[in-house]
Every structure is written in structure tokens, then in C-alpha cells.
Length: 288
Image (cartoon, rainbow, N blue to C red; front, side, top):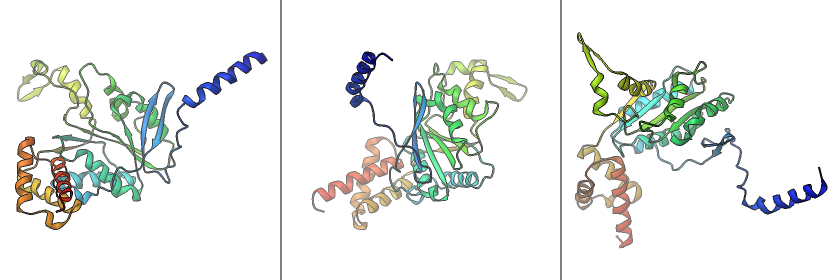
């Protein structure tokens, strides 16, 4: 190489080096239990992240059936037994994402590892799954708040990995997703115009079949619903006593919790957590 060109290139690198991002830490799956997948033009990379909190399965009230089903499915997977991809769908704030976090905190000592993928990075999902195939650990690949618009083709990569490619996902990878939509794709009244009743059987049109085909690839569906008042107040009591003291939960707190839910237009585990933060924080601020 021409010496002058070499000098100029070194000079250029000296000027731009401090603008480059730091080299990411390599994921050590013996030490790390969770990572984020970030796609880029040359492929993608895994960034290790610590668990967000110490949330436990016992902290989640009102979803006992969903907890039991997901824990059993995940434990079977960790034991090398047959298990299903899981779709957690339903009301906002009802504990879908919290259940995934609590699951990691509870089962990481048993070998569970979690990789979170943003919806916008799903096009790189086949590459991620291929990387994980060569590790000894067992991974749940998790996409939070998953939904697609009608013109969004990112769901095709998800369909392929779930149950479409020739190879399929490796035995050490499961996919879990949370969504407010049961079928993940928007549904319109016009979609049902092609539905026909043939004898006693309902035959959906192509548009409906296409939308159902994605969620249908998840073998485990878990529905989450708004809390009734008793469960909501039980959750409020739990979080108030967790964040504060037992005496912080009293008749006044109960009345305020009901008012809080009324103003928000619904009862949920998230609402109970938010009320507890407000109630305990305000009491401590005023020296109570």
C-alpha cells in the first residue's frame, strides 16, 4: 500500500475511533441468564442484560391457571420433554409480561435462558435461532407486545421459524410471545365476508385463514382477563405491604384503591402495582 495512503487512513481512523460504539460484551451463558437480540445490516448480536427485578411467581395474583400451565410447559422443555411455543394474549396490564419475567427469575437456576427480540428485529429471527442451535443451554426467545399491521411482512419470519421452514426451530429453543391481540394481526369486518356455512361447518375465507395461521402455530394459548374487584384489592394489598408495611393497608387504602381503578377505567395487576407505588410513596412523603 502506498505509504501516504496508509498514513491518511490511520489519521482518519484516529479521528473517528472515539465516535464508534464500544465493543459489546460477549454473552457468557454460564453466567448470564438473559440477553437482547439486536439486528443490524451485517446480521445481529446478543447483548447480555441483568434481570430487571426480583419479581417472583408468588407475586402474581389472579392468574394461577396461566402460571401453572406456563411453568409446566417450560419445565418440560428444560427436561428435554415435548413442549409448545406459547402465546400469552389478553387485557392490558393483566400480567402477561410480568409472568415471563417471574418465570425467568424462578427457573434460571434450573437452566432457563431468555433472549428478547423486538418486533422490528423479527426479520433476523432465523439467524438468531441458528446461533442458539449450537449452544448447550435451553432458550426461550421472547417477543413482548407482539402485533402486526396488515401491510407488515415481519410476521412471515416468525411463521417460518415457528412451523414453516424445512428444519424448524432446534430442540433447545422455544418461542414465547405476549400480545393484546389473540390472532396478532388486525381483524376487520370485511375479513368475514368470505366466511361460509357449509352444512354445519364454518369455513373461513382466505383473509381469516391467513391471520389465524400465525397464532395457530403457538401450541399453548393462555388468555388473560381484567380482574374482578376482589382479586384487584388482593393485589393492591399484596403490593402495598411489599412496598411499605402491613399497617399501610387499611380501610382508607382500600377505598382509595377502588377510586384509583374507577378513574382509570379498569382493574388489573398493573393498576394494583401503580396504586401501591402512589399510596406508599405519598404516605412516606408526609411522614406516615
